[in-house]
Image (cartoon, rainbow, N blue to C red):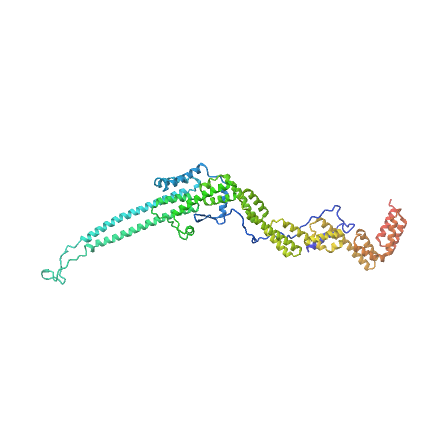
Length: 630
């Protein structure tokens, strides 16, 4: 229906031309039209399985952990760590006077409470320095939290001492009661002690009979109510002592647990200096030798130690690991400075990333000069861009970035990048070549499959454009367009009209071809109309009218073969009429013009066919010439 509508619009009424198609005075080359469907770059959201993997030398730690002394410490969200690392690379070092004073205060606290200094550790002096350290913004008030933990621990320890003193005073009371009860049990006797009575009753004058026995009394000695009350009081005192002991132990455990929670949290935050301070305060507050961390054995913190070291976590182990982490950071920064001096930026950036991930708050990391960090920042930026380009399968951009990184860092591991780019580009090129072979073999399904694979492997492959051009040049639309041009150049307008429904959509949008198509279709429509009328005249025996109908249109379109054949078929039937017209034309065209003879033959032609338009026109021309109106 759409094609029919186009055809009708193209065959609207237009002025007639001297031939079926009249080319423009200055023909312009028709712009090449692209096919409606591009099978070469069909994008699909599906991410194909990589035949080579995603092995990219990228400063992108995927484990999100760091190991110190055999203990694996989780670093949290890796994307957050990368963002913080990039921020660190672009911020100035913490080397102002305030930062130096803060670090000196931390060192003084550690020294004041250290058991290795020349005199005993001074808990009070170290405690008083904590508020000064907490005033530095970079401390994040952690020293203030440590001071509060130490203060609460000392209060709890004071309460425990009071309970211990109470138990001691209760013990004194209990011992005094026991001594008094023992003396009473030994010395408190009945007044009739030593008298006897007869077992069977009294004799004469009340004398005992049947033998003498010691007198017994339930109100004295061990049988007295006072003695029983003493025993009850001793039991009560023992229960009170045990209750106080349980309170002391519970308070100690609760206070230690709260203190240790802060230590573990600071260790997880990689605030190793605060862990060291807390551990040394801990050893000065509780001198019972119990340093086991009171945490759930199934917790993640417990598993960090038990799975890695096979031992239960202790305050000493946190202290040791913190010292180890500080030493490792120093070594990382030392290696970083050496590698940077050798222009080995790739390894240097990795060592700096490891140092930052392990101890971003430590002095060697925080005081690193900005110019050194900026060199790493620029390298890491290009590295991330390379990673993004390869992930997006933009291998042209990836090759450019790889070459830049090779120049920037002599240790850049380019072999994986180069092999990846070479593998993918080769696979895409081979798939395109296979698609071309299938296209030439007219196996469109296989060609589509191969070109889709090539586009998935390398969407920006320049050869995809070449394949698109090949498709455009070999497609049905372009084939039809080429046929139209060939038929137009040959003047085979009847064939164009025969294939009009094939050519109409193929040339749509091409102004030059559309104009030619319109002329051809309108003029052929005029010719076919004249032929139809001539056929009808012949059918009713009016051959002169039929011939003259075709002769008139023949003057406009002398190159139409069908029109010429129909005229040839009618000519023998109207030979006398055509002979008279031909003679009249010959005398009219002579020089000098034979007016009389020409007019005579026109009159003869009209006598043969009185309704002849051609004869009437010839006669009228001569009358206008012989008898002008003037």
